[in-house]
Length: 350
Image (tube, rainbow, N blue to C red; front, side, top):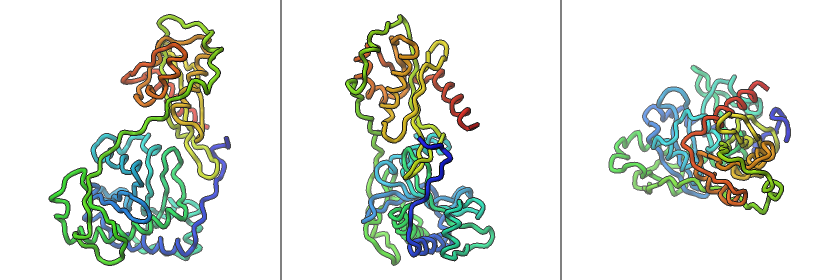
């Protein structure tokens, strides 16, 4: 893996598309729909760019802009936020979003590629006090928030225009949502540029799907014979966790967050195994590799391995059966959690 500080060039977007996108963002900024829209005024779009759900930011007076949640992954994340199942301040939230963000920030918060684009298209901020510039970011599960590519720029252009049309409708029809209740949302299904009417919207109920489990790990993919010869010590209990780490890895085509698994002895908190994997491994595969490393380091097999993830437990059942231990669900993993905090604190100091 490359060093996390290695530069990765941003995707290429035609300058003419940049001009259109910045122009649409400026119109949206001047409209300032956050003055009458809240986070609950979510609407959907379903057209040639795909299906997504759009939320306007700014009602709290902190972040001003628009976020587009893409596909079922994006919708699930948004629905969990709206239903309070996922706290907005949860630090793990950044690892699971499938979204595009357009917000407005001071010049000092723009990255160099953003400033380069502004210079090339000779863009001037529309509002002088405070002087804020559009900033566009792509969020993808497991990847570092990154610069948008051409397809994402076209999607954002479409959604900024749709957001302006929808917010103008809501400003004149403030009771639009009154007959409807969560999780029913209005969808724009026809591409257009003119004023939007309530009759053009289609209302659909959207429900959060449970996250799909990783495929069950096949024991035959690993050389388990040497591990099966190791003794199984009575009453041995370990904690096993796997997670995304915020230690960024800078590899093309886009920087990503590595997956890390930790095997920790439940009684002493001794870390037995640490395994880091990239985008080619699932979270379950990462967990298995950490577990096997723990067995090799301890030179014994555990009796019980505890995990707080039902999805991980499901995926690891074949490995547990092959190695002769029981994998059990636990509400919390205190030793593994402490090991994770220490590991991430060390990573931030590097």
